[in-house]
Length: 149
Image (tube, rainbow, N blue to C red; front, side, top):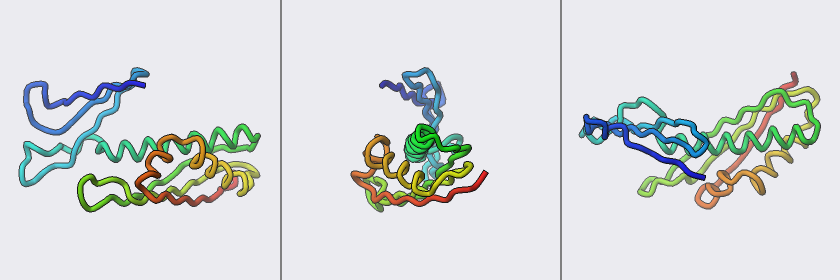
C-alpha cells in the first residue's frame, strides 16, 4: 500500500497547512489544519478534514465495511449501516486517541441483534486493521441499534 502526501502551500504562497494525499489506488484526499490565530502562517484554513479526523473516519469506514460484509455473508437482509465515532485524545503530545466509542446503526429486515453484535465483535477482534491498531492506545467501546426496514 502506498500514498503520497503533498503540501499545497508549497505552490508559491508558502502559507497554510493544507495537504493532498494521492493514494496508491489513484484517489485524492484533502486535509487541512485548524487556523492558528496567534500565528496565521502556521495554521490551516479549515478547508478540509484534519489528518486525525481522516484517521478516525478511515477507522469507521474499515469497521462498517466489515460489519456489512459479515452480515451479508450471513444472508441477513441488511439495507443500511452507519457508525458514529466519538473520541478523546491525550492532553499532551503525542495527542493519541485514548478513547473511541463507535455507535452502529444497522437498517434491515429481520436482522437479529445477535448477528449485529457478532459482526461488530468479529470486526474489532479479527478483521478491522485500523481499530485493532488504534486499540493499542485507545479504549474502544461499541454500541448498536437496529432499525427495521
